[in-house]
Image 1 (tube, rainbow, N blue to C red):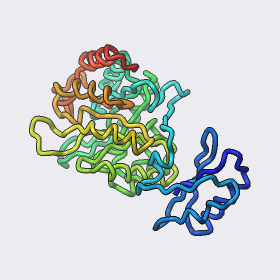
Image 2 (cartoon, helix red, strand yellow; image 1 turned 135 degrees about the vertical axis):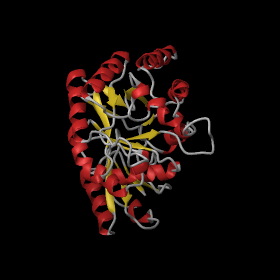
Image 3 (cartoon, rainbow, N blue to C red; image 1 turned 90 degrees about the vertical axis):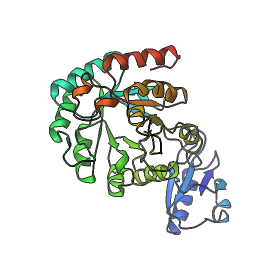
Image 4 (cartoon, rainbow, N blue to C red; image 1 turned 60 degrees about the horizontal axis):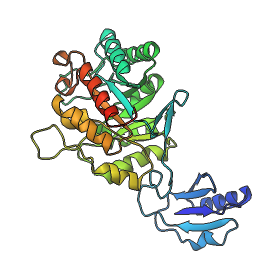
Length: 335
């Protein structure tokens, strides 16, 4: 339920509605707007009777919210969410396509700095690289952990790029929060509810990747977990889902973008690297994602992918990333 206040509603009217919601054991969520305030009702176990509020002072309307996810719903929050970084010059969800690029994993300080300088020169504003790496095999490279985070901090210091890197569980989330500008939750952890709740308590934005078998509604409910703890700075990341195809690692679900824009106010970025799994498909998928209205791209770039410790076959060479940026600008997409 969304209680919409009249334009001339007083603060006392608003507080009266908030108190009435609490008196029923529900949680009020004030949503200030440009012209009027709305108040969402959370944690109700069943339908809310609009008559409970329609006759209260200052109330204009009581609207049922049809989706099980409320905080991420456009019904509850009609305006698009934008997430600023730094002084606000970089904005996810704004008019510019945000580019996040870098290797799958931090392998060394030299490697990270070398790639970071190249992707920044090409047009990236975020450096993406994993310090903690969840891998299918326990014998595969698991990341440099805190040492990797220290290297990422040096990358930010020397290049000015913002850092996005993954927290693999709730125990390391605080450590990642200390070092990163944005906390990534990977596909394997989309329904790791302890991690989602911990990320909801963080003071940094969260990049939430879609689970490889998840429906869009399940993905949005995972975002609801984060927002229910107070963190409203959530960016969704479409990274492909598992299907029966053999010509690519996953299937990029670009159909989800227009649907998400309809039902949610959260910005959506696309990871064509994990969707493709093979280098020659990444640039065409990235162009398609940008044309479909993605707020950003998350692209794996490595200067020696044949020697990469993880995901080398899907990583672009720096000159290929530069070509991608050129292609995007040729499409009249602002980056």
